[in-house]
Image 1 (tube, rainbow, N blue to C red):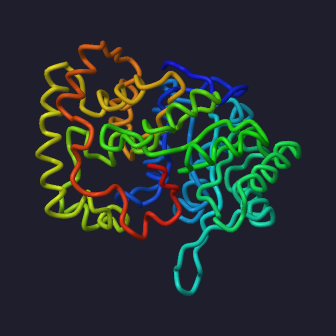
Image 2: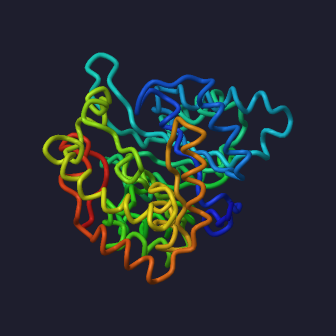
Length: 334
């Protein structure tokens, strides 16, 4: 597994990591044993980066990872570079979602994450969503204080605009910006890829296989109806889903002609966009993780890239990547 540096001064991590939202029932039923099988396979493949969050299963994902680490003994600190996130909150009575970037909230949530993970320091701590009531400079100062306190090693932001990154960077080096990025979501190319390159921040691409659309076996409409999050996304609702599967069949044909799995090709394409891109696909299957990891082994030529782009040109997807409610939080910049 090839490695890339995390931020300006961070460790070198596997360019394919694991997005641990899949360690909850987010994309279908799973359990701790299944998730631990994925983590064991990750070690076999040389994958050493896990991305999770305090809200993934309301702590379940972090607990599953913490239980795995506890079984590894003294070497647990050397196995994975762990990233987690905080700032998304839900009202216990109404379920209404909001964002909290206050120092008190972030510190409290970080302590909870450390306890669940069984760690005394987080390698990479993200603001999951910006709180519009607090200036990003103030939030960056809070995170810098956590670095100085030895609670976190580096920090970053999820789904922010290039302009916000520039403001934060003036306060403290920003190790990473997390954003959805795939052949289906090309918006990072309109400023975020360029700005992270310029500022030497890693661009951590989540959903690099387009939430399953760019795999050999995309989700069926019947399966999606059981996924509370995915069924809200216009891209996965009828008639958009049928149109998107029909279009991506061409991509699956191209991958087969190249002798690789569709997921492997999708990962290889994202990694080819910039040397500072790191991918964090999620999976509940060790076998699928092997397919994802093989994307690191594929060296796409200019000719290959042209074939892929011709098969899935910019703007091919039907439907938005988020619903109206889901768009509350991510910063739109294009």
